[in-house]
Image 1 (cartoon, rainbow, N blue to C red):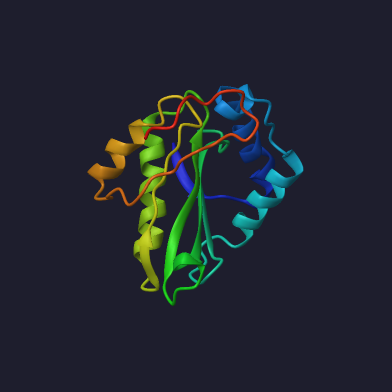
Image 2: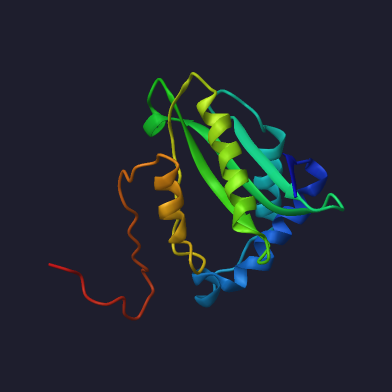
Length: 170
């Protein structure tokens, strides 16, 4: 697969990748759907501002097959540290591919996101995140550590409309 900058015309295909994988997510199991018009707007906005180097700058790369059709993509953006800092941080949004995409392709996409951020002298830190939205995403933990990332917190979830989320540890 070849990796290159995403094109505006590919916005529907990138939304299609999200839609293809959505049934596997914990959100789909709880009746949360993708707002397709909003997804198109968000992705198109990121493609339009891709390769930016200032607050609000974005990064979108696609892995394409031999027919130049997107099979996976990475998307991130630059934001001020804690929204008020005088330096920037790179924030990852999506690192996702079709179900049959090789993990090595996702690895290459991620490396390009990191390189984009690390090459910017205004960037203080690069974020690499994963959640349990898709099965086996916990594998990213070892990948990120191998690439020099350190855990710097945690994400907790509380579902306001869930019948039972189990007990809270004391």
